[in-house]
Length: 323
Ligand SMILES: NC(=O)c1ccc[n+]([C@@H]2O[C@H](COP(=O)([O-])OP(=O)(O)OC[C@H]3O[C@@H](n4cnc5c(N)ncnc54)[C@H](OP(=O)(O)O)[C@@H]3O)[C@@H](O)[C@H]2O)c1
Image (cartoon, rainbow, N blue to C red):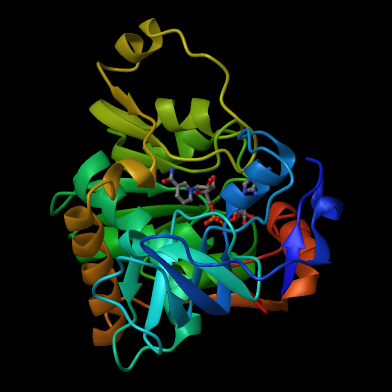
């Protein structure tokens, strides 16, 4: 099969096309012909080695396609079924071996590209607004990189839970997109001298109930300083780099605030929780209440360009690789 292989950690250039043996479905696994593979920031962390991943490996941990074979002991799925999955390495390829335990049936009426585009970021937004800081009606929350793949999802779901959303973005085009997703206020964080002061100005000095921060190093301090008393900083990523160690006394000084650093795997750890979150997200897409914005589709061999674009802040919404 044709795939992308990382032989050594490094920049986008280490994402090289390769011809590999077709994977064989092991016990409990489905062999899936990949129709679309989702590109996520975590793929860049694993490519660079920020998240240790033994080489060589086929990157990518989100995809959708059609089951072409099943391993021993598989129940609930058969050849010909359309499935979508996340949390399994190896989706930047024409074929992927996917544990049936990680697979979700793609509902009728949804195409594989949109399914692959929404599952990881949609379920992330779902747990962020229901578990990390459960949004309450009337809360004002801060969503960084609001025009990004995950940011557009958080913005929409926070609005659906009754929040007022302050989004941050870097450009006018991104502002337009974030506002269309429901953001009530936008701050161009690359242009304001004091981001926390701008947030406070929009909240009558009080600050936000929660800051959803996937940008990390460059926004963490401002996120902390933007919280209302006993507010919550949900640090869920490091698009600008990892946040250095934090003196816990700062949480006291900031107003008895909370900081959490969650990940999707801990919010989809059981089959029950996975199918619940996936079911809610896919149903919302089908119902038309959750918009999926595919900002770019690339041929599989252009994976390096997709990573360059994502890390270069050139993209909006979701990026897909089409094998
Ligand atoms: N913990 C979890 O469970 C989980 C799950 C999914 C995603 N995430 C995290 O969510 C974040 C967003 O991921 P995504 O895949 O949806 O990406 P994305 O938001 O589509 O792209 C990243 C965006 O971050 C902003 N950004 C600010 N400073 C940046 C910098 N120095 N370099 C690059 N980008 C910068 C850019 O938007 P502007 O140009 O508007 O600033 C950029 O478009 C990542 O940190 C990712 O790790 C975490």
